[in-house]
Image 1 (tube, rainbow, N blue to C red):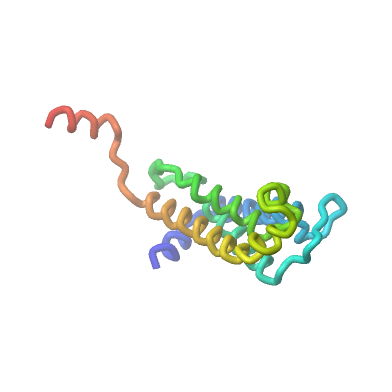
Image 2: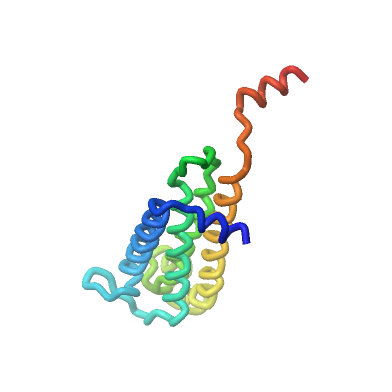
Length: 161
């Protein structure tokens, strides 16, 4: 419930950043993985139906995580949870990509290994990517409303004790 209350209070600027980032993330992942057909990139194995949903959900969450970095007048400075969001984006790329078109996977497992070992774990990678992005978003929103303790005052009180 707290997330919905927080989202209702977001200014339009944050929503524009979220929408723009979500669209950019979608395109940055969909074009090289050939979910969106294009003349530059190819795909040997057709995408699965869940690839589109995983990419769409991940893109929306990436947009929401990015929007939390847009300062609001009443928001205090928050710590960055970027490592979780970035990990979620990278895992999304591997989850929706063609298993035999990924050079890293081919080098590590070979063509047969990519099909036998990597392709079956892609749905789990998609769920993991969504979980990482969701965790990053929840943590960013929670920290936004927490009280920050200035470092100098905290250090001074520690030295006095």
